[in-house]
Amino acid sequence: MTSVFFHIASALLLFLVLERMTRAFWRSSLVAALFALHPLHVESVAWVAERKDVLSTFFWMLTLWTYVRYTERPGFNRYLIVLFSFFLGLLSKAMLVTLPCVLLLLDYWPLQRFSFRPPTSPRNSTNDQSMNRKGQRWFAYRFGMEKVPFFALAAVFSFLTFLAEQGVGAVKPLEWFPWEARIGNALVSYISYIGRMVWPHPLAVFYPHPGMLPMWQVAGAGLLLICLSVLVVQAARKYPYLVVGWLWYLGTLVPVTGLVQVGGYGMADRFTYVPLIGLFMMVAWGVPDVFGGWRYRKVVLAVSAGLVLSILMVVTRSQIHRWHDSVTLFTHTLKVTTGNYIIHNNLGGALADQGKNEEAMVHYTEALRIKPNYVDAHYNLGNALFHQGKTQEAMAHYNEALRINPNYPEAHNNLGNALFRQGKTQEAIVHYTEALRIDPNFAGAHYNLGNVLHKQGKIEEAIGHFKKALLINPDFAEARFSLGVAYSKRGNGELALEEYKILRKINPDLANALSKKIGG
Image (tube, rainbow, N blue to C red):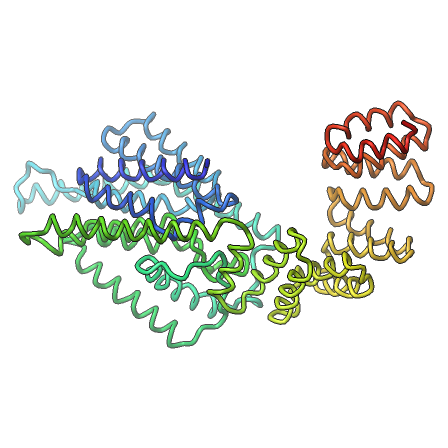
C-alpha cells in the first residue's frame, strides 16, 4: 500500500510539474495517466522489494517540482530545497544520477531558459550581437555553477553505488559478459523497451542475459536508434519536445543498460519506470501536432486516448494478478522466457516453502541442466535431499556448491548438519566454524555449533554461541530453548526460567518443552 501511495503521489506530481511548465492541461494529464497505468510499471509497484524505486521516483518528481518553482523565482533558499530533494532521492536509489541531465533538458524545453537574445534589442543590430555574446557567457557561467552541485552529488553516489555492488559481488566481470555482449544487449534493449511500451506482452519478472546476440539484431537496433536520433534532432527546432523526450529516454536508461553489468538480467520492466516518461511526452505532444488543424481533431484524440488508457488498465490488471504469489509469478515467467535457470531455482524455493519438495527438486534439477555450475541450485537441491533423508546425496551437492564458491556460509553450515547427522562431529565443527569465519553474524551457524558443543559437554562454549545467535536474532526460538536447557544443566535455574518466560511469548510449544526439560 505504501508503494501504491508513492506511485499515485509521483503521478500527481508529474502532472503538476508538466502542467505548470507548459500550461497544457490535457497533454500533461495524458503523460501522467500513461505513467500511472502502464503495465511495465506494475513490477516497481507490486514488488515490495522495489519500494526504493517508487520512493526515489517520488523524490525525482519532487525535485522537478521544486526546480520549476526555483526557475520561476530564483533564490538561494529555493535552490537548497531543490538540491535537498535531489539528495533524498539519491539516498533512496542511485537511479537519480541522471536527473541533473534531465534538468538541463527541461531548461531547453519547456522552460526555455536557453534564451540569450535581449527582447528589446533590434534583431540584427551590432548591439544585439554584443549583448547576445555577453548573455551567452553569463548564461554558461550561471548554469555551470547552478548544476555543478547536482553533478557532484551524482558522481559521488555513482561511485559509492559501484563500490557497494562490487563489495557484494553483484558486479559481473568481463569474463562473464564481454564488452561486445554488453553493448549489443544495451542497443537491443533500447528498442525492446520501446516495443514493450507499445505492446506490453509478454512481461516477466526476470529476463536472462542473452549473451552474444546475433550481429544482425545488434546492427539493426543500432541503426534504428541512429535514424530515430537524426530525425528527432532535425525536428528539434520546430518540435523541441521530441528531442527532450528522446534524450530523457536514452539518458535515464544509461545506468541500467548493463554496460556495468549487475546480476544476470538482460533487461527488466522496472528499469522503464522513469525513462518511459520521455516517450510519453513525445506521444502526448507529438500526436496532437500530427493532426494539426483537422476538423475532428479533439474528438478523435479524446476517443483514442480513452481507448488506449482503457486497454492499458485491462492489461495492467491482468499483470497485477501474476504478482499474486511467488509460484504464480515464477510459473508465468517460465512460460514466456527460455533458459531461465534463476527462475527455475526460485520457483523451486517457492514450492519448497509450500512443502512441495518433489516438485521443487524438478526445478532445481532443470536449473542445473541449463547451468551446471549454478551454485544456488546445488545448495537448494542439497537441502531438498537432506530433508528426504538422503544425506550422502545432499552432501555431494553441498560440496559441489563449495567447489564453485568456497565462501558460501550457508553451504558450509548445512554440510556441517549433514556431517553431524552421520556422527562426524569434528568435521561438522570445522564447517560451522568456517561458516562463522565467512559470516560472523550467521545466527544459524552459532546455534548449530552451540548444539554440537552442548552434546560434547562443553556447556560454557555452547552458551556463548547461543547468546551470540540471540544477539543477532532475539526471536530465534530454538536458540532460546537450547540456551534455557544449557542454563538448567549448568545449575542456573533462574536464568533458565527467564528464557522460558521470553520463549512463552515467541513459541508457546517450545516453552512447554523447555518447562519439562528444566523440571516445570
